[in-house]
Image (tube, rainbow, N blue to C red):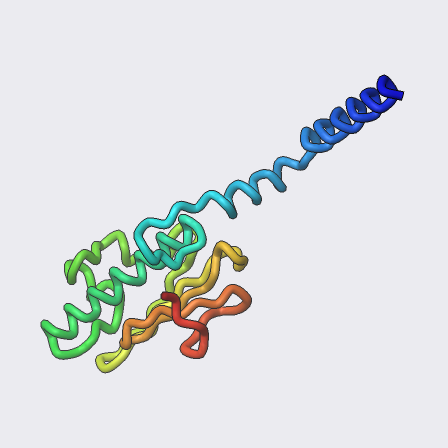
Length: 151
């Protein structure tokens, strides 16, 4: 009986090992990317490097708008107007931001900035901000003023 039990354990261990070898690569990539994000700073609300980049872009635009408003007494009405305000550069006018597309609507008394992911999922939420500087996020639909504020 001892040899039979040992043989069963060996067969089960072999089957378990074989099962892990045949996990589809896409499943492994999803597990790795979902669990491997390293926060960029204490309290970082991002869930992925793509989100971190989108949120960083939004923070730069919001800071540039605040500086522009302080200097000119109104908000910029286009991203191009923000060039050289704060750390906003000419390259940042391009709305294609990697995994996200930026959308900007500016008026002299307000603005709306959105970041829409090319693929909406838990690691690629949509983001929304207005002139109040609060960034909102939603993982199921385009974010708006009613979406939850990211911390």
